[in-house]
Length: 340
Image 1 (cartoon, helix red, strand yellow):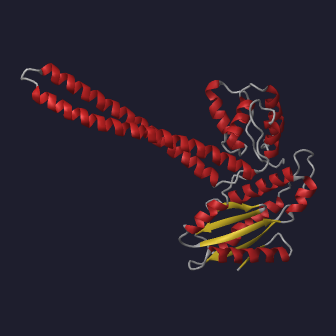
Image 2 (tube, rainbow, N blue to C red):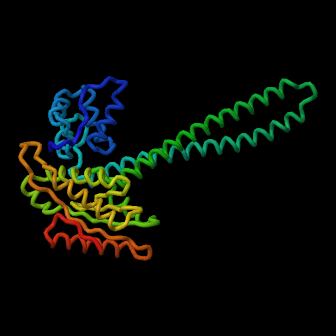
Image 3 (cartoon, rainbow, N blue to C red):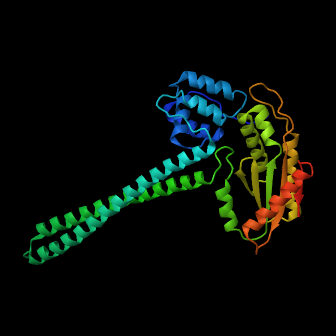
């Protein structure tokens, strides 16, 4: 889609910069940080696969992002890398499994270090008791024996300190792994937005004044049927970008399929409607084209239902009300916002 969606420039990277380039590549193309995507990015950027690098350069020339379909197709050419899953849900599941396995390895390693320190501590206490008894029995002037025992104690203390430092490093690495797993589990891999789980957690912890908007792309099936699912995915990403930009500071989520949910904090219903209407107008005025043929996609719009949330009502009631308002907007002709 040629309407300003940026992409990272592809180039061969030196060994010192390769890691940073791969990270930037994954962010620019909204690829989750799992081993499959990493292998793909490494092959494209390291110079080990010139044909792949050239194809990635061709597809991203002009500031385009790679689509999931592009990555799926090209990843099959990367030596030793299994094919990527064909749907974003599977990508998220795979990534979560990898991170969970890595975190479990860190837990096992940390537990082993702690067990070692515990054993050393018990041994140290036992040796200390023996050493005290030896010192008490040493004749006056047996300074060499006292020095030997003290030196042994110091070495044991230092060894325990080193083990404890390693255990601390393991704990820090484990926290980072779990933070990654937490973030991946709450992010939609197609759009980069928060997902339904993140929204559910935010709703459960809400405090203060909130409004909820449900937004649904109009006639999305017709877009997929006419232009294919790759174009449909790009349309979803374009709408996600617009909502995230205009509703900056609020929680914008992909709620499923072609539906988005926006949880707005500290806004009145009038302010919430104004935000959603601004995003709706921005989407409807974009002139999107297919990347492959440059053919116009046609008007892309969404309808929305916006409601204020009351402190004493269940989340299900809020969603039911927003959903009814959304379908009222659809029934009234689409490309509009209905509110209480």
